[in-house]
Length: 212
Image 1 (cartoon, one colour):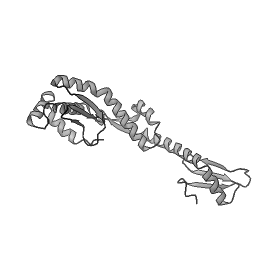
Image 2: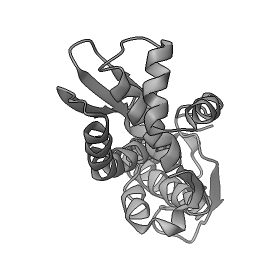
Image 3: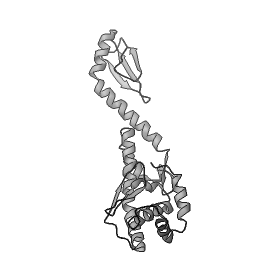
Image 4: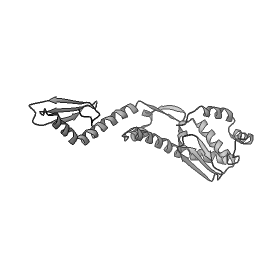
């Protein structure tokens, strides 16, 4: 009947009403109370109020989404942490209008945590290894935890904030070691093991962890 609206629509004929009233229920149903019997006229009224209807439906969807989100958890520093334990993230997620916003805000959270946490750890291991990266960059990457260019630029995946610190440190040391050995030779792994004795175990564990 009213195919331009995706939510269910209920028409209540009220001959004693002088006006038509359109309301949205808590479960996103469009409710029309009207003295009008002509379906065409009702359709016109709904089209005239379509913008208002969609804004109300979006607000309801957002509230339902936020309520669902609050019961979720995320990977953070190697643990499964309930969002209720991260009030700063919840405050940001409350602004989300859709799933794209939610994904964006999650990425912002990990990036901010990375910028707060990783620079000091990189500096610590760089001094310990007597290595001097030209630049340290932080960004979200889909297929790798980090990289090191031939120009001496080390890039770290901000999503590594999902990992335990021992795995974070392994990635940092691994990429710094490439400043001396741009390969995965025996010398490269030996250098990493001078800093992290459990290099083999950490490397094996990291391969089992999905990025993202």
